[in-house]
Length: 167
Image 1 (tube, one colour):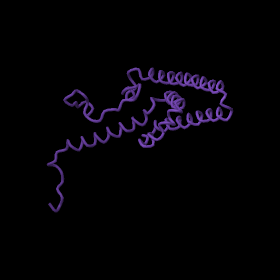
Image 2 (tube, rainbow, N blue to C red; image 1 turned 90 degrees about the horizontal axis):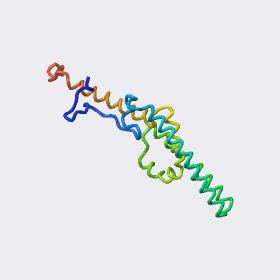
Image 3 (cartoon, rainbow, N blue to C red; image 1 turned 45 degrees about the vertical axis):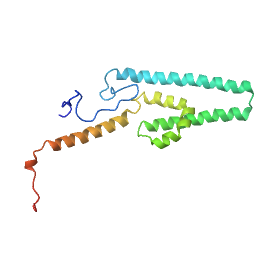
Image 4 (spheres, rainbow, N blue to C red; image 1 turned 135 degrees about the vertical axis):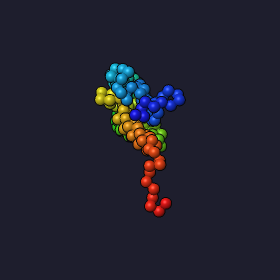
């Protein structure tokens, strides 16, 4: 099979899997500590989300000390809640399909404000798979299938091809 055919550099011929953040290419065969990494990402992102909530709590207390008024305090709390919900949804959707770069750039501020939602999305997704694994697996398998079809087509003997009747 073409998996064992190597290029001059010692890497297998054909498309290579794209590494995922925190996982490298361990997601392909679920080896190299994949399960431990998934648990680590789930716990780590959950701990980071809790720490972020404590930081936001200090910001809320700062608003209370500054006595900015109830409407401003409510506005800030609602802003962080809405931005976190939108960031969660955007991050969750990015695990299933590649995000549009222009849209990603326009949402950069919202995603920065809603960082708690992004952390929670990572934590929840890590309970079932490496975040983005299904998207990368689908793309990798499609590329492998396409490569194998092309390779199989090249190994045929061109002299055995049927000639067109008009040639």
